Length: 272
Image 1: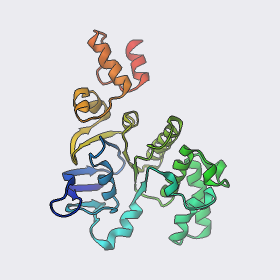
Image 2 (image 1 turned 90 degrees about the horizontal axis):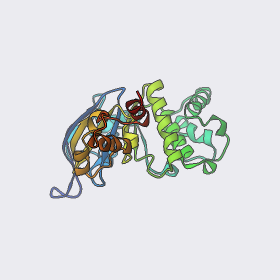
Image 3 (image 1 turned 30 degrees about the horizontal axis):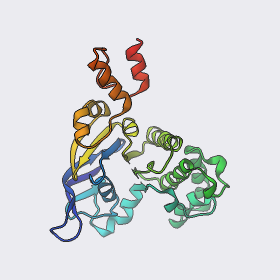
């Protein structure tokens, strides 16, 4: 479990702005959590605490009981928590796709035959096996991000944190990445923390956490969170279009559920 206890993070001296303000949160193994919030809400700052890229000003963060502020645990924590960032080009280091995935494995001294086996397994899991001998710069944006994910999961993390990993992608690339994340979560049992400002991605998680000014404003299932349209708007957040449609239909007297999240659910509600 990733446990965040009374976390405070402030920039500058003791009088600096608090990006995270007395936040307590537990993320259990096996969860798929989406963290949403408007710009400046603290999403990325919080994400960087999960693998000790940032350290608390006050409070503590532990990963499977290991305190991020103790230097002796830093290597173990970063093996447990893999990070994928917004720009995949910043995480791609090799000239060939399969060499990029192998890079981290070589650095930890894994035997060659195990590296080959793991690279093949990981590239197949993110649907990039057919591109293994290509140069990464020839890949699409979505494929590059899936390659960045492959490099992370090759290290066998327990948790994968995606910090706005779909923000620079077109709709097709975003779908490719989300499909990959869901497969890894479902088939590999990897705990996923997805920082995003796309509400149609957040509805695919098991749990949604909304931040405002470094504090948790909402925490619950997508169905519970996204029917609170007025609250979401007050936080400066979008609402999934299909949920807005359900809200408008109910206002006109059409008896559809208020917590519809997908087109398929709307079809069932309207055409039982």
